[in-house]
Length: 164
Image 1 (cartoon, rainbow, N blue to C red):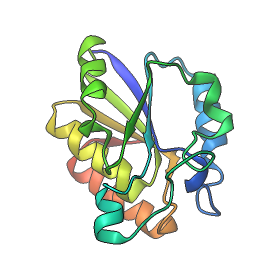
Image 2: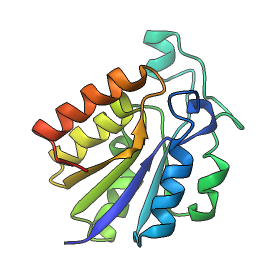
Image 3: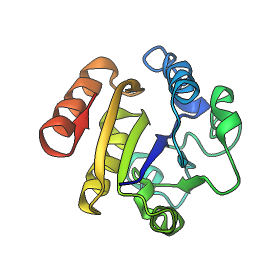
């Protein structure tokens, strides 16, 4: 068993009243625990994305909005950040190769939005055979606040992994 921490889309664009506590919670988690490896997903929207084509969502296309928040930058490395223009980082072949290369069997997932990208990554991790754990106080929903966050946690807990 080898565990990795996946930090999902904790970017400047996604920080609001529902999510503002998440960067400090994840920073504290990183300082108090030893996770190796640590991976980051980074959503960068583009005109070709389904977000633009189907939802007319044009946010999060460039820095500083697309940047990982400052509190987590000390853990960023050249080889541990994986970009995407979809809900799930599992669409990035470099991410899948990284997990295989590091012989990862378990993923602890934290980040934003619990009810969108985190949930999508949980489904994909499960489908790829990874054991999934979610840390509740290190996830939140920018889009739908506590209602969406709690609904997603219920789905994850019943069907995809462990919620702690």
